[in-house]
Image (cartoon, rainbow, N blue to C red; front, side, top):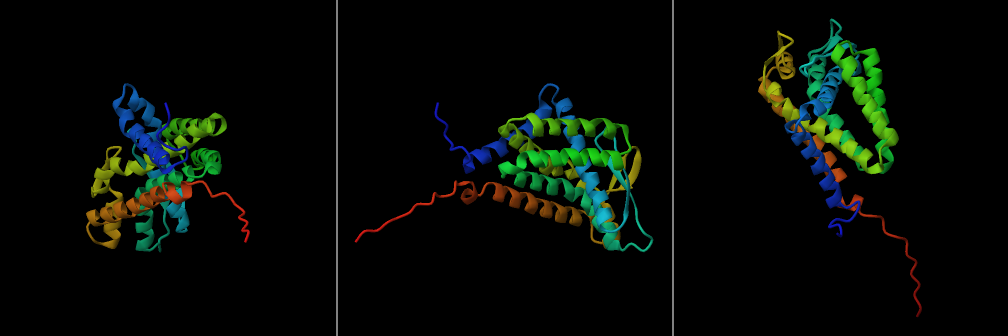
Length: 254
């Protein structure tokens, strides 16, 4: 049967991204699907907590440790200077919820370039291993994160080009859609983590900058949507997917 889409076309690329989205959404509903998706759910928590920690480093503060719990929740502990500004506090709080969508957007962008498929998979696997050694301090993190890194390394090493691309697309869509999983948390002022009441990320931003926590939740959602939308627009751009025209020499005879 003849394919209805041209290889490398906009329709094929869109179809693959839709397939990745369907796998993310439908996998938990399948038998044992929750077990299959669980390591990658932990990965989205890693994106979130690393967002907090790396933002702290970028703001000149100390990133002390990262804890990931069996429930899928996590905590990134940072030590801030006594004279740290309220904007430093707010930036670190916002870094967590923004990080998964930022990572998802970058992975979707990388999936549009064949030469980047394997290097980016190696890069993500290496970053997971390095962060586990330096910052992770919980049994779930020690167990799940190296497993995910090994799977990504295996895909980078042995997977076919199509599977390597799909792995990037799956990770990108998973990270981008994790915002939906955290939607309720984003619009909650307080949360319970390991039995303790703490301010949510948006609650912390509201505490130092003012305005209701739901206002900051809306801002984070808007920024995330713009990042993911721009990545999808780039990845699906018809002019970029279209093969380059061949050089043709024309001779005119009068």
